[in-house]
Image 1 (cartoon, rainbow, N blue to C red):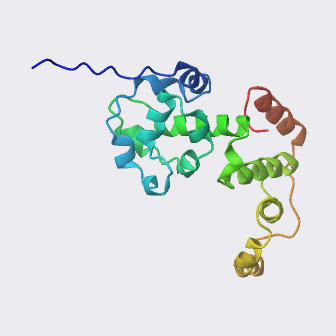
Image 2: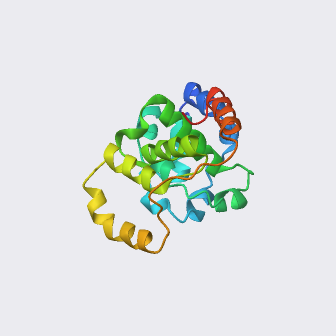
Length: 192
C-alpha cells in the first residue's frame, strides 16, 4: 500500500511578522502547539478562540478573524501559561501584542467594549495623572451603551456613599513629565 504524503500548510509570514514586530510577540514562532497555555488559562472558556488556537491562527494568517474576536481581551495577565510553557514562550505577552495590533488596525471594536475601556482609562490617566473612575465610566457608557449605567447605578451610589467614588478628579504633581512620557509611549506605538 502506498503512503500518502500530506504537506503542512505554509505559515503565512506576513501576519506572523506583524505580531513579531510588536514587543511581546517575538516568540510566537517557537510554539509547538502543546496546548499547555489553554489548559492553564483560567479564562479560556470565555474566549472566541482559546490561547493555543490563537497562536495557530496567527501562524495561519487569520488576521481579521482573530483581531476582531474577543480572545486576547480576556487574557487576565496571570502568566500561568508563561510559567508552564515548555518552550518559555510568553503567551500573555503575545495576547497583549495582539491587543495592540487590534487597536491599531481598527478591528478591536467589532465585538468587545474592552478596547474602548482601555482608551478611556488612558485618556483619564493622561488628563489627571491617575484614573478618575467616575469620569472614565461615564465616558465608557456614553461611548458604548448609556443604558448599562442604570444597571450599575446602585453600585456607584454605594461607592459614593462610602467615600470611594469622588465627584471631582485629583491631579498629580509632575503632569508635564507624565505628558512627556505618554507622548514618547505613543510615538513608540503604545496607547493613543
